[in-house]
Image 1 (cartoon, rainbow, N blue to C red):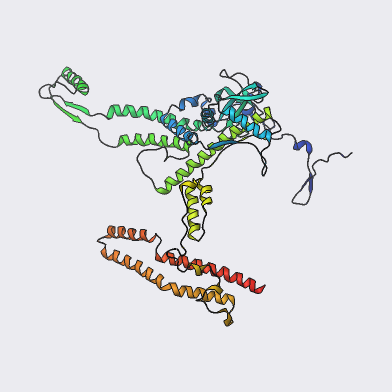
Image 2 (image 1 turned 180 degrees about the vertical axis):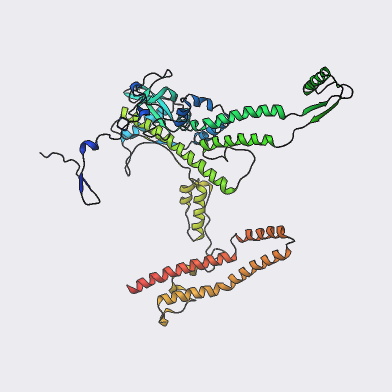
Length: 530
C-alpha cells in the first residue's frame, strides 16, 4: 500500500532546492498575535476586534456617528444618486448553476426555481438598497429567515440589519454584540450573510466612505453657522442716523431705538435736524463663504460619487471631455456597486444550496448588459454597404421583429454610385480593361497594371472633387467681412467636408480596389505556383 507523497519543493534561482514544509503550508504564520498588533489585541478578551477606521479612531467615535452625517443635504443627494443608478435597473436574473459547456442538471434547476419562488416574496428592492449601504457604512449584515415546509428549507425573508450591532473577532469572524457593546457572541452558520465594501485582513469592517465625509460635513456646518450670522449682520441694509450736534445722550438713544424699529416696520419718527440714510453693504466678502461651502460640498461629492459634475448642479458648464470623464467614473462606480449586489445575492444562493442540495451547483444572480441595438444596426449597415445581403430571418432574430410587420427590400443589381463595384472584387484575369495575361507578364505585374489603370480612370474625378472643395474655401475667404465671420464660414464648410462626398467615395473605392486586387493576385500566384 503506497502512502501519499507530500509536496516536494522549489528550485531557487541559484540552483539550490528548498523542500516544502507540509505543516507550514497548512498553518497561518502572519497573524495578529505573532505580529504583536496591540490595537487588534485590545478587545480580544471580549471577542471583539477594535474598529481600525482611522477617522473614527482619531475622534474617539464609533460607527453610530455616521448616521448623523446622512442628515446633510449633500450627503443625502450623493447617496441617493449613487444608489439609484443600481436600483433603477431591472435587467437582472437568477440562472441555474451549470458547468461550462454543459446543461444544468435537475437539482440545479430545482434550486433555481425554488429560490426564485421564495424571492418573489421578498422586498428585493429593500434588500438591494441595504446592500448598497455597505460602501457608506463599510458593511451590511443580512439576516436570513428560514421556514421548513414540505421537506424543503424556504428562505422566507432577507433583512438588512444595522452594522453597529455587529463586530469582528480576532479571526475575522462576524460576531453579535448588540447596542450595549457587550462581549462578542458567535453567530450560527447559515443565518447571516455580510456585504462588505473593500474589506481587508487589517480592516474586516470594510472601507467606510461616510467616515471620510465626517470632517467635510463638520467644517460645512461650522461655515453655515458663521455664514448665517454674517448674513444677519451684513446682509440687510443699514439704517444710519446722524443726530443733531446738540442732541443729548437720551435723544440719541431714542433715535437709535426708532431706527431699530424701522428695520421691522420701515416707519420711524426722527427728531428735527436729524439725518437718516439707508446704506447697502457692497463687496465680495460673502463670496468667500459661498466658495468655502462649495469646497466641502465638492469634497463630499468626490468621496461618495467619485466626481462632482453629476451632483454639483450650480449652473456652471464644463468641457465635453470633462463631462465624459465624470460620466465614465460614475459608470465605473455603478458597475462596482452592481458587482457588490451580485456577490451578496450569490452568497445567499450558495447558502440556500448548501442547506437544501449540497451536492448541486448554486444558482447564479447577475445583471445583464442591455444589448446595443444601435451599434448592431450600424454594423449591419456597414456590411450591407460592402455587399452583404441579409435575409429576413436575420432581422427577426437580431432585432426581435415581427415577420408580419416588415419585409426586406431586394438590393438593386448595380447600387447607385458603384458602377465600378463588379470590377473591384474580380480577379485580375476577369477585368477586360486589364492587359492580357498571355503577354508574358507575371501575375504581380498584372495586378499592379490593374491598380494603375483604376487610378488613371478615377484620378480626374478625384481632382475635380478636390478642386471644387478648394474653390469653396477660397470663396469663403473672399466673402468674409472679418475674423469672426471667416471663422464661422470655415466651420460651416469644414462641417460639410466631414460628410461623405465624391472625393471620399473615390478614395474608399480605390482602397477597396487595391485590397481586392492584392488578395486576388496573391491567390492566383499561389494557384500558379501549385
